[in-house]
Image (cartoon, rainbow, N blue to C red; front, top):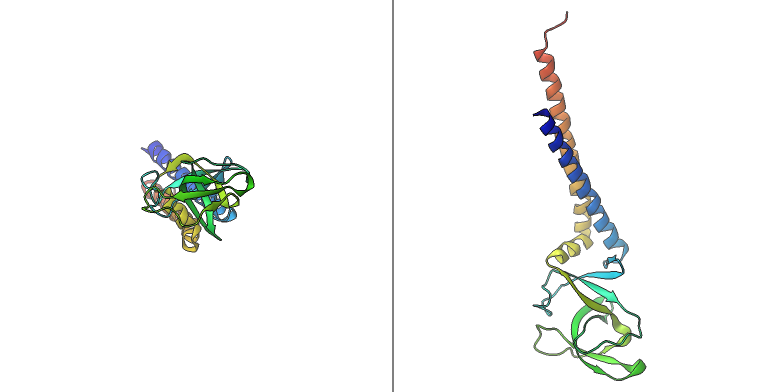
Length: 187
């Protein structure tokens, strides 16, 4: 019985410390990268609208392969581009116009009725969608980037560790007290 408690205790401790470390890494990476974490050369982005459903769902994360500024995309490619300062959009290319340095792309969200009103200039393209999607994780990343999310993701695992430590210490004192009461006095 005592061995089983030690195994469970060790497992819970490892899980809580792992959770704390993972949460800290998520928050630090998200904040350090300006909200767009990178992994193995790919930018990881949250999907905030349903314009590309069913290709990827709102709240998913997608991987974007950043390309050289001179890269020319083809009709049917899904690209992420800067619509205006601070706003990124991921839509499918419906037409490629121009040649050389003057290429522009007409884009449309798969779930939208109409094409985007403004053509996308080559210099505004951030990268190409890589067909890698994880549903619902984008909600978590968006929350982690908020001030409240950062605060909670740093505090909750720490508080859980403190509570767990308190319970463990209380149990240890209880066991010592029980042992003392069950032993006959040596006086």
